[in-house]
Length: 202
Image (tube, rainbow, N blue to C red; front, side, top):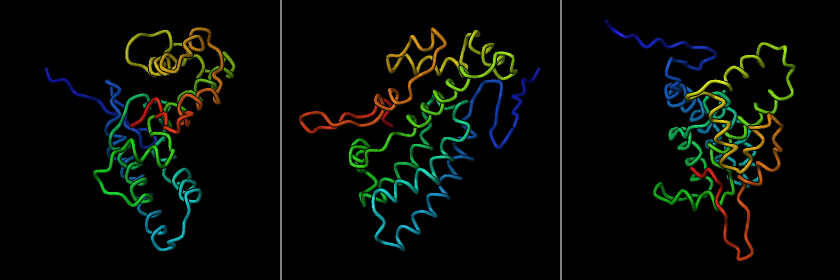
């Protein structure tokens, strides 16, 4: 008997029985985000006087939505190919070499890591589910997923809340304060001037 791994494609995201999204992230999203970044880099080099705020806005508007596409489903894990896109964007703006320490670039740019972006999208999805009417099919499926064991979407959300010290939010099925989540993720300066790195630094 030969076991066949069935793959289902929906809205350019590949699903299989093992919930492995590497094909979607490494091939489709990483390539698409790379092309969007190439377009920004060409304009950045041509204009020459683009500042930090403008460059960050371009990345958040054109690259970030691609990197986080459908991340509420697959976003808990770390996907190196997606992280490399952000690292490349930071290197271009800072004008540093490829072997520059990633922690140093994050400290200079003050950006959240890709995984932090994905976690925020998952928490926003959790909040939407809490506001949804229990008679909706989507809410019913979400509750069913939450009551199951194993590697599921709800398992990733639970782990996120545990990591940021908000375990009661998951236990009580309550809304998560997004500002509190950002405070846990965004780099903040301490009194001695050093930088605290994000909890999910890539």
